[in-house]
Length: 223
View (cartoon, rainbow, N blue to C red):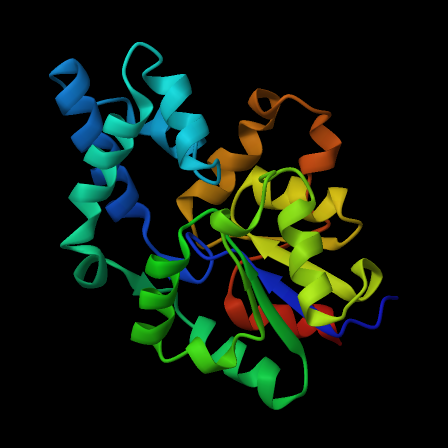
């Protein structure tokens, strides 16, 4: 059994409950581009993808920068009001730090908004390394975000867990050689794993090593 020293978290859908905020942002783009709202199941299946890549796929006939601007403008004024933290996550992260674990975040979100969320939750000082979409050339499920985070933490993949809510998180961690843990408290968790065929790689790369239903369940895996 691995002796784990390091936990790398996804942010959206794992630490932060941003589901409604992200769905609302996508619906704002759909309304602007098509005059009606999009299929929520399709929106959920894209969670975890880099925003620009999804925008190109969803609205290829429109300027990507303009579409992204609609999305981010919608979020900007309501971000802090709309986001919450999933039950037990603050206690888990603080507990990990207290017990000497190294804690990182690898997210497809921008650094500014990620830090806003961490500050709101009182967790900014508990994160040892933060890797955002701005820090990488390649994005999940490529291993680069996880590997950069591990390099900053001084950890090896063998001693590290990647914890997230989407197939992209699982693929990122597995491709980096980490143990992967899927969280079960986000609706995106199930839709993300079920949509792995859309990612364009073997499904088993995106199959988690473990699934937890509550934040505190991670302690059982850590032993």
